[in-house]
Length: 357
Image (cartoon, rainbow, N blue to C red; front, side, top):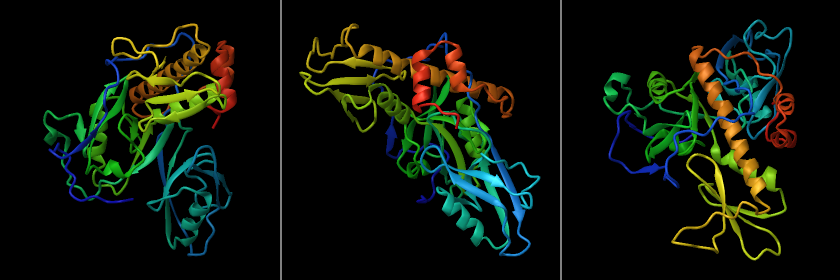
């Protein structure tokens, strides 16, 4: 990961990357009448074991699963020095001895090359759909405590935040912020910082300040771009050609034989409209009529967004109110949705948008 020198925890006048509003601001999405149970927001476990000699096998098996770069513990042998620890099969590995691991092979290599002790940092629960981890490096930046932030309580380490849809959204990033070198982008929602679930902007700022001397800070965030692309692919499939804008706020779709393209335009609240760029009126692009054959697809996409964001929001609220302790495991998502009669969302689950992993 690229390092940047001397990034302050206080605002600067440097250039920045900012989230541009694409529609009038809406404070929160509606809560669906028939939705999902709150998602469990993972917390972090750090576990250390010492090798009796450099060649000792530590009895851990690893497996890559789910999305890209997701490595989990596949098993722990009875003779492993990690027996009796909080590690369990299924835990997602974030780093071993400070090294980020993205494949089962690289995890095994780090373990094998370790001469003395092994320290694993793992996530103890399944991530919500669309949520992912990144590691932010701010250890070598100037550390200031929360009281020095003054009135700029929405800013830390080159990042600006605001509440949106009941979640903390990254709204602006200075070009020299350490987050620029990560996969997290403006518009993403922050769910946890260094294992602390963050339900408010002040909690995000405090969590980063408290972790400022650590070499890497794990951040769990929700990626709206990934959710949009997955929902569109799930509901439209290969019937239409699709082309996304750089910011994933518009998807141009074209069906063979159709007179022209249509656009799925995502609004600031997360939902999308179907618009026809060929029919302009009063300098505005009109929304396609409600009886258009693609409108049920748009409704399904919007319903999926509302359900998922609502379940994540409620999961954050529960975890925050319980001081970071995870709620009990929710029932099977597929069984739950089918029992509630949400046929379209159940189809999304069956097709792989939401999985038991």
